[in-house]
Amino acid sequence: MSEKRKSIPSLVKDPKLIEKRREQIIEAAVNLFIHKGFHKTTTREIARASGFSIGTLYEYIESKEDVLYLVCDAIHAEMESRLREAINFNGTGLKILKLALKSFIRVMDQMSDRVLLIYQESKSLPKETLRFVLGREEEISQVFVEIIRKGIADGSLRMDEKHVKLMADNIMVLGEMWVFRRWALHKHYTLEEFTEKQIALLLREISVSE
Image (cartoon, rainbow, N blue to C red):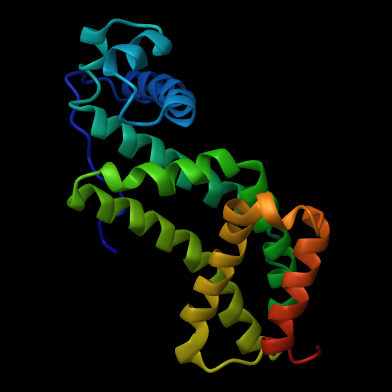
């Protein structure tokens, strides 16, 4: 996707101030949206929780939907950043994939409330804005595409190129499964047990050595 982020207009011209204020808005809105939901949260509540007036809030956003978009984008950015930071791209594709899977599921567990927020509330975004949110999800999926292709190239993973994107999407769903089904899964598995079992099942399909 050529356009990775939606541009949110601001009446303020200082980029650093915009970034600082929007970080305040995002953090305040995340907590409100998680506990009250998007529709029950008012812009006045977001402004108050952010530490400034409703008039100041509208200097940095145009609508409550803008705030929701900024929240979703920030959550995706944190997910991708933490995943990439956890991956050492030294070693075979197989080794890197195991590490990436463990890191991804751990990050999904740590950010479960925020991940749920995206899936519960992003449907409230206008169609065009939602396109940007889904594009960010694709960027995270692309991390796994890169790893799988490295494994195919170095011979540690076996897979037809036409199935690489499907496998990357499968991995995304595995992480999301722990978020959406944790209430049932934790009766039978710890996070570590769930992770190890899912890695074993996945690598049985694509690992040369498994």
